[in-house]
Image (tube, rainbow, N blue to C red):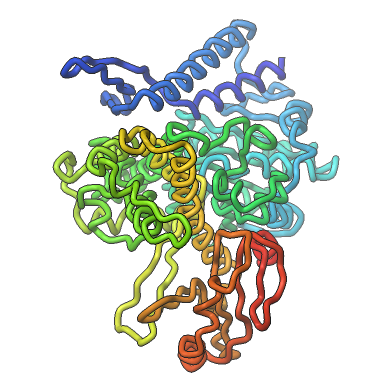
Length: 594
């Protein structure tokens, strides 16, 4: 019977991650248009889909329908009068696993590798932290539930026998959780894991009781959930210094490689950001495999995360200006625009100007001036039709189509929440000669999301009539060149972001000269030394790659400004070696050692 309850819980969780609603069709000017339609908070929502996205969305909705049918069949097997109880029939209000049921719940992941941050949750369980709860939070599919299961399996037999797992569902309240914790406390349970605790609508406002009553009396309480902002609000409003926070959203390359067993920077560029890849480990879904799955992730894991937290924080009084964007179904559009423009300065124009693909413009210029095989094919395509198709594909609204006038206040708030979610990080650009202003380049911590946008660009390019008429060889060359340009800029962001995260005591930035730049400079302000780098998405080592590093004027200017240069290096995809005083560093080796 307990296997049935566990399977029901698994199905309910899987169903909640899939889109609701249905696909509708409308004939407009003789053309069939497809829309995803659903009801949310009592309001009907609708979103236009192209044919490919509609097919993908329809498959996801069909998968939800099949799982719901399985759930109904399972529930028929339950005794008519039997409530969902624990193994020893304690009258719990929430869904709780203990004993053998808890072992069966955790056991399937026993052979998976652990994330680096596992040691923090392990230390909390083994050491005394009176009055403190442990908060494990982050976006969907970043390994939170797996970390909990691994922590449960790491317990001694004696501690395991006094451990419970609570799965909070929509509709549960903090009062329900409090009632169950009292029962567990009476039976001297030592460790309680509470998953998706922010589903309890009054959690943010009442979280302190978990620390003040139960953790203070010696119970270890681990809270987890996807509602990152909800935890941050509860920390600032209720818990203060009575919690230990562990954020799982940022997954660096070394963890991606070690935990998932997947090697290569291009694989990280394509899928990086979640603990899922083709069903090899952790999850069955490839989060960023298609545009539709990426859109679903942005909407459910990011946009709805922000909306859910703000709705229940201070009774919705903290929603500020983003509520109107969400109510008009335009928050995802704004976030998509930021993701597409992630390699460019985050300004109000990113959200309000008519959409233009920067990737296309950069590739057009580079192909035109290529030394070996120059081509002007991207000058000959129908740029207006291309841009319009890509804009529709990315679900980006032009200024005239936005029902909410986006102001600088919207921009600031969106950026604040993306930063709080650990989704975006600002990388500074310094200048020689010195400027009074400082520019920033916004890097995104989930590269797979950005790559999905790039693939959408390439797919749209294939529809252009002029482009379809060139030879297959030239067409393949152009497409490969565009993707390598995009991967190269993404590789720069990954190196800068991970270097900055690993060296908080140092300054990490790009250095721009009147002509040319250093892709990365790492400054040790105490030692008054620095390292200078070029970052290239190439497997070949050629002198052209380090021309800026070898330029005596640039070298002297950087050394005068930041201190003695102790390393000159090119980070690339080839083998590590040296060329005179220039180091060539393999990208994977560099990221493993950061």
